Image 1: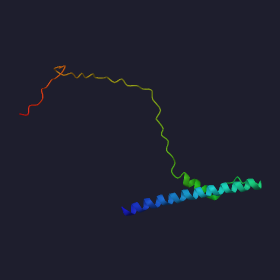
Image 2 (image 1 turned 90 degrees about the vertical axis):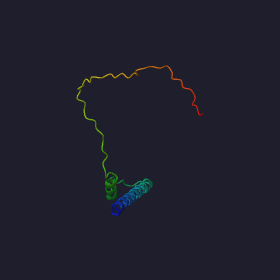
Image 3 (image 1 turned 30 degrees about the vertical axis):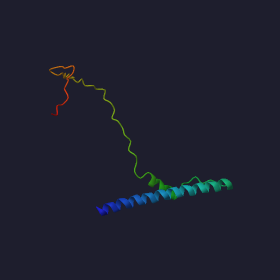
Image 4 (image 1 turned 180 degrees about the vertical axis):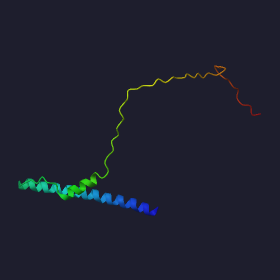
Length: 102
């Protein structure tokens, strides 16, 4: 039990560190683009190695899409049973006297 909890917390901690690394790397790219705009030099369109690694981290678990099966167009008639519930006697009101304590 303790081993499993340790594994869960370790994976969650490492995932958080990976997310921070991806954010810091994205910020570094933003700073690089600011410098390139000031210099007006060549633009590199190739992705760096860290971008590829962090892309794997960002899409580690693919999202599953919910797909409904196609309708066959068949309809089944269901016989409805009517059930009537009515009391054997019908009273408009049922008056009671106050309780007697003596």
